[in-house]
Length: 190
Image (cartoon, rainbow, N blue to C red; front, side):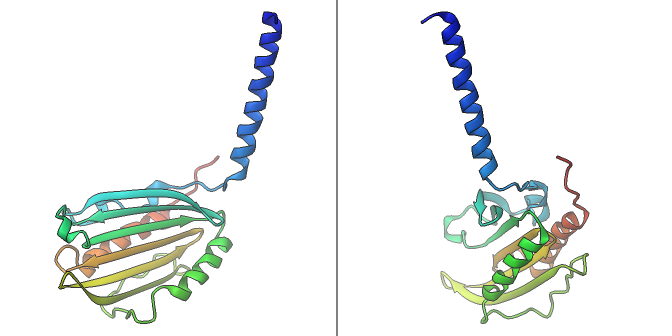
């Protein structure tokens, strides 16, 4: 084989690989995940530190998950804040998911909290907040969840607290900061 035929073969293989990569890329969801819309340690009380994070494709979109812990003590890992952000191509897809999510969250046995005063800046946003008292390792804990749909975003914040690591007022502050970023977010031009 001559060097010219090697070059031709290499060029053909290169083109085939390029077409394969383009085809694979075209199959995935065309959804941008704005990480600036995720909860961070700057939103939480100073005792919280980051834990695991994940990014995964979900039906019709993409999802981010992040954990924050109040203590590095393994016996208290249940004191935490979790944030999940699902991003869909448009608000109609997000609304369809939010409708399904509202069927199971919050569970019927969770109670709405009258002292929770936060309301999203966008009056069109759908949201729910509820809590339930539980005991973990014989410690009384309050488990709370906040679900919000803003345009094409679904945000779920889950909290287990002993009332000291993070209070409902501090949680409202964190949710307010997140909501402010949702309200001011503008999709970057592609």
